[in-house]
Every structure is written in structure tokens, then in C-alpha cells.
Length: 203
Image (tube, rainbow, N blue to C red; front, side, top):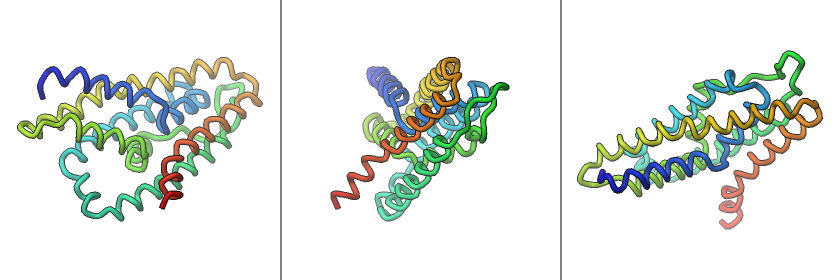
């Protein structure tokens, strides 16, 4: 990949990774409810899972969905249902107890990694990166470099949302305030499904 494309790729990775989306909404909620240390596996799962997703799409998995569009449609709607389930879980997280704990558990590394495959924003990011920044004359090297850049940029970007949640945690000492915050995060997660709803409505 020409060096002049490296900076735009890094900026694309940063902007798409740090802007609001299902991953970042859930990380902020996890930071509030469970603290930074217990959210680390969730963060690592997102970054690792998404980096692997970019590489696999670049090396041909995306072609499978082009040839079998029904598979992509099924995956998309399964993902929407799973996101509704996650929104329900966030909305019903308990208040922060005196010892700092809450009802429920943070998302695990494997759960967060697997979630990338049903996350609409992750698909848009991965496909856009591969289609925009790969170079035909050095395709394999391009895919590996794109994956590496996303891996390096994504983790601190999503981690900032968990850190922001921890900062909010210090302010949300009232159980009612935590409850309102969790419901707001759940509603934002549901709102991120709007493109799927709009696509279905226009059919």
C-alpha cells in the first residue's frame, strides 16, 4: 500500500472506531455498571474480533455473502434480535451496590468477538475499508495492513468509551440515576437498528 494511503486509512479507522455505535454504547454502559477492569475482556473481544473480521472479509468471506445474499440477510436479522436482547439486559442492569457490584456480568471476550459478526456497523466498517484501501497489485499485503491498522487503532478508541463510562460511574451514585442511564443506553442501542428497520419498511 502506498504510504500516502496509510494516513487516510488510519484516520478512517479512528473515526469509524470512536464514533457512537453498538459496541461503544455497550462499553460505556459496562464501564458504568462494572468498572474498567471488568470491562477489559469486552474491549479486547471487540478489537480482536473486528480485526479478524476485516481480515476474513478481505480474504474472501465477503464473496460468500455476494453469492448467497440470503445468508447475509439472515445474519443481519439474527443480529438485530440479539441486539434487542442485549438492550433488554442493559436496561435491566441493577443499581451499583455499595461494594461496587451490580446484577449481571460484563460481556466476555468470546461474546464480544462473536458479536462483531452480527453488528451492522462492524460490517459497514469492514467492507468499506477493504473496498476502499486494498491495492490490486499487492492485495494480500493490503488486507494484512488494513487489519493491523484497525487492530492498533480500534482498541484505544473503544477503550475511551469504557473509560468515559467509568468517569460517569463516579457521578451516578444514585440508583435512580443509574437506572435512567441504563435505560437510555438500551434505547440508543435499539436506535442503532434504525437502518435495518428503514430497509425493511422500504421493501
